[in-house]
Structure formats: structure tokens, C-alpha cells
Image (cartoon, rainbow over all chains, first blue to last red):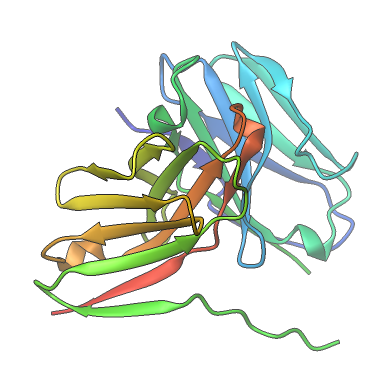
Amino acid sequence: DAGVIQSPRHEVTEMGQEVTLRCKPISGHNSLFWYRQTMMRGLELLIYFNNNVPIDDSGMPEDRFSAKMPNASFSTLKIQPSEPRDSAVYFCASSPVGGGMETQYFGPGTRLLVL
Amino acid sequence: GESVGLHLPTLSVQEGDNSIINCAYSNSASDYFIWYKQESGKGPQFIIDIRSNMDKRQGQRVTVLLNKTVKHLSLQIAATQPGDSAVYFCAENFGGGYQKVTFGTGTKLQVIP
């Protein structure tokens, strides 16, 4: 299995631009998670989906962030407009539904720098 | 203004020695704890977990110790190998649910060959 796939791996953009991060979960995994990691705050859960349905988005910082999962094999996290404080590494993870944290598999992350 | 760079605490260990990585957690109501390994340029990887009704759990070359009295968690790695070089961080879960998990910022383990 290829594992969780994320693209792009690196993104540099200017403040005010729209950023779209992409994720392909492991085949057969029905839960998908978006996390953000910074040195200051560590890893933070932004939103997660079960069977393509958003279950909890309370971690999404503000309205500038949105996430979609149009089908079982694809999800996007969009930031519009982006700000320098959004600079971080964004991880996507997937797991079987109800599998618990020990069954989560993380992608390699997208390193975002907003200038 | 000028930003101050942040650096993770670093533990340097000779290959073959045992490593002990510590973590202080914040919520006395937390009942589930996890250790992760994160290699450079990769996502976090689950290593071992422990529930609050236990004080010790062993895996392959790793042991997690939980001291609820002082809210302290430790990860012991036996016979540390170069492949163990990574950032290790703990997580605490209180009340269940993915949103009720708090992750630490981690310790960088450097294995000296």
C-alpha cells in the first residue's frame, strides 16, 4: 500500500492567496483527519470525517479554513485568504472507522509557508 | 518584530545505550496516553499507548511508564539504534474523542554511532 498521499509536499505563497492542500487516504480507511503542526503548539486536530461526512470541525481556526471530502479517496483543505500565521506543516491521516488513535496512519505532510 | 527561533529539547545517546524521554502532561483527568515517533520530513508514527489504569506497558524495545501522581509519562527505548533518531512526543486524551487529545511538542533524540 502507498500509505496516505499528500500534495503538494511544499507550498510557498504570498499573504492573501488561496491555498489548497490535497490528501488521498489509505484505501479502505473510512476516517480522515486533518492536523496542523507548529513548533509552538505541536499537533492540533483541525477536522475529521467519517465516511466522507465531517464529524467535528471545532478545531478549524476560522472561516478562512474549509475542508471537503467529495469521495472516499480524496479530501482537500483550503485556506482563503492565507495569512503568515497559517505557516505550518499540515498532515492528513486516515484510519478505519472507530479504529482508535493507534490505527491512524499519517501522510508525509505539506509544509506551508505564507509570506 | 523579530521572531525568536524555537528549538526542541535534545537528548543525545550513544548507540546501544538505553534512552529515556520524559513528558509532563497537564490534565489529571486524562485517561489515555500515546507516544509518537516522528522522523525528519515524515508524519507522526504511533509507537505505544497506555491507559490510566496501568502504570507500565512494554512493547518491542520500548516501555512506557505512567506516574499519575505527578502527571508524568516516560518512554524508555532499550539498546538505542541509529534508526531511533527522531522527534518523540506524547499525547494525552481526556474523556474520549479525537478532539480531546492534546499533543506535546516533543524531544529530539540523537543517536551517536
